[in-house]
Length: 321
Image 1 (tube, rainbow, N blue to C red):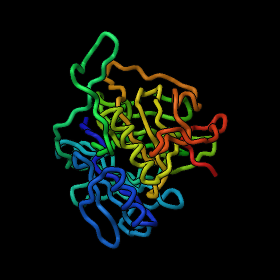
Image 2 (spheres, one colour):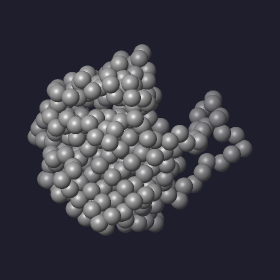
Image 3 (cartoon, rainbow, N blue to C red):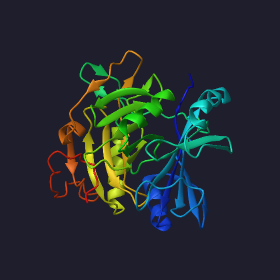
Image 4 (cartoon, rainbow, N blue to C red):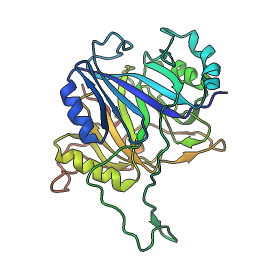
């Protein structure tokens, strides 16, 4: 069995490079390379975020119109892990081995690859929380973040019309089922022990393919709030947040993204082991979010904006129309 460590690189195909540059700089990523055909960003630990023009011939085909995510590359610790994965990938559409990456197209039509991880180990920790009976922070105030600096890409979420075969594809690579909406959605983690999910596959009644969101891990709840307020002050539009997921326990804030669909700041998700038993849930807005601020918090006044409630029976981050 291979050891998959998490998302190492993502690549978007976009229409407006200038808007994407502004957005991801405001988001807190570091721009490491810029050229007329694309942008290369990285997070604190070196996770790569590539932005390319939609018509770039090197990209896997898009599964939906407009800007969207085109490829997810996962990191492994050693070449031996690539050797284990190669037989599972080589029979898939568009398989190739180039620049140290084994890549193909998954059953949902999304480009997927594996390489020896290029992420760096970093020495940062979130702020301990003081819960009742467990004071972990004494004589030390919590920080106030003026903006976020994401640690890494923590997970990706795709709409699919092929839930069963796409899930089976990832399970054959070593992914584990964490929780599920029977017949509607599967939360998968890339290793036996780790965060609640690295990949979420969601099959809506419309049975469409596409990107729902990309989630960036930050240090703690305080950075979720600081980052969200900064994005709001910069004029970017909240889709939902701040709020809390009851399924993974994570705190979140979602923004609309010129590179496609949504992006999320999140922190404090559940950590699972081989002892975890997957649970079944019925989909719905209150299962997606225990509480959330519709329309976001204004970055200047810190008050909730007026916004309509989600349509009954729909996920709160679903695109409309």
